[in-house]
Image (cartoon, rainbow over all chains, first blue to last red; front, top):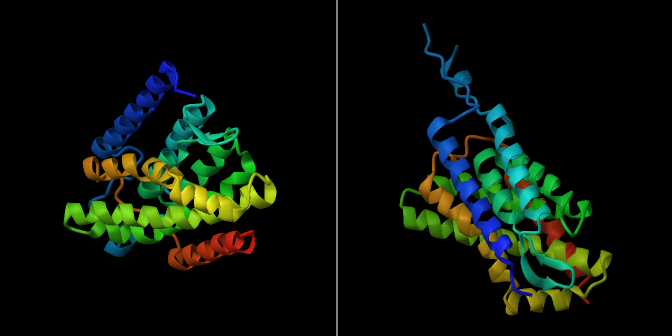
Length: 39
Length: 205
């Protein structure tokens, strides 16, 4: 059974979201504890 | 505060929790919407959760991988019974991944990641073959072995489990830096591998 268009588009959107999340976590490093400088 | 305690690696930090939640949600959406490649088995498609489980394990450790596998099993065609069968792959990848990440040469790191993913998938497969043979009674482990290894499904599943994660490893290495720990991961990976392969071998015919 061939894939329907919406399934292909949906899969591509999910791949795009994956890379956007990866890029966001790479650049912003959210939810990360800030390193406290001593003194 | 000493430098050692400052640099102490958490077992599961809020960042790890966020990664598990986000990739668990992405996996549930993908599988729940039926975004899968058709044609694996009758009523079973090539579902894409392997991509998300791998990325979560790389970025946030085996606990995150296990959380994603549980969440996605809630919407998977195979059902919630399936989630422990992902664990051998998660543990084998987690056992080798910090060492893979440290490899300086990018091409070698990339190739090693694929080799370990292929090994982890092969180990994981035996448990799944047991599940299909002993529980669902679709076909024997022997038939599943020859069908998967010689007729294409292994390659398709390897692409699902390693292609996008390996691109993420190349393009956003800071995101998938293994800043997690898991006690005795090598032993746990070994025990999970033995259980998975033994189940498959015992139900061979």
